[in-house]
Length: 226
Image (tube, rainbow, N blue to C red; front, side):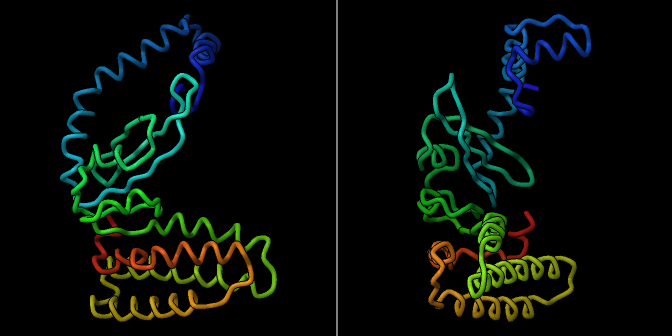
């Protein structure tokens, strides 16, 4: 109720009273959270210890509040584990403190600059983030302005479909490499266009900056499945 639904401890108290007839103080609700945290501490410490040894990790961060003051919730996840760290800082130091500056695994991220400072890692831009940028570009667009985001969306979806075909042995590794080359050629031609639409130009600059990180997962299709 408090963390998933975002209810204050006062509202949690009222929920327990109205639905279950259980008297619970605001302090009692807070103590329950603290007690659960203490019981989970050994598991959390184990997750932190094995995080740097993971072959692939997806990091992200979002705004948080500590006593009403701005902070950041950092998350590092894969199919095996999820590690959180709440910190007043957003920068590289937090991620490096958990992964290690020399982390050499595979990172799937949204292109946020500090992640690129993991120089030994193999980087993959999160296609989900890119696909979510396409609808806001398409909705207000008209005329030729719709072509760029529509084609980018199609190319990214094709890349994901290729990964899925390979996973069910619907295409050979050689066929995957050939298809990847065609997608890269299509993308490169799109990125050389002159775009009059400012929003499309901004998106194109982002794609160009991370061009070498867009289809890394097709070098090793298992990368995109972990």
